[in-house]
Image 1 (cartoon, one colour):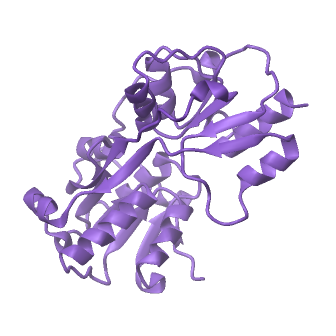
Image 2 (spheres, one colour):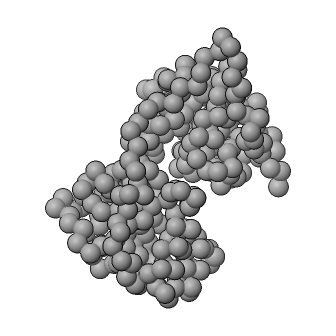
Length: 290
């Protein structure tokens, strides 16, 4: 496998007199460490995961089940629906006008290449692809001859590294940010604040699934990965009350959505030196199930 170009410290722009500073749109950030529940960690036997079940026999979920003698149940809370090619045309976006495509999820990659097929567009071999993480970057191999593409990603799976990658290529690149109708706005807000030549391309949308056959309160913990998950929960249960259900969230935007609903957060990542939700969950179960 040929590795894509990785981000390094050299990607960080060096301060020079007469050049504008990088602007990071300010958003008040909660002190999440203080907001995590301090209640004693009691044993966790069942966790409801608001995502599809992993494909294949190997997964860290299955490892944790064996290690801590507990059970995961996977139920997608939302479904992803593609925007039809004829509807995408109404956005008046000519795909080959853009030399840099920004992906923050596998869904974005799936629907970008679906739209390319529907519109019979073949992207230039010189097109650059910017991804939030290595996993997303490697997923491009599903659709492209990877060695012929220019792929950039950060090592730490966070938007800070992605911002630095975008800044490095800002002057010579016209960007297309692939997103859903309900999108995370951190990267577009950064690009707007720093004068990027970019456009947002809406290629898919999310909708809540019917969860009436799934009672969250039959589980000890609920694991959420996006704001759409918590929105889907309240869509199905408008009068939802948390009770004894513990809630874990991946990402600050997801955590904010949980807290904004007046719910208690028991676990989140990234937080401090814990960068992934699975590592955070492993630490939690080590204490709760000892």
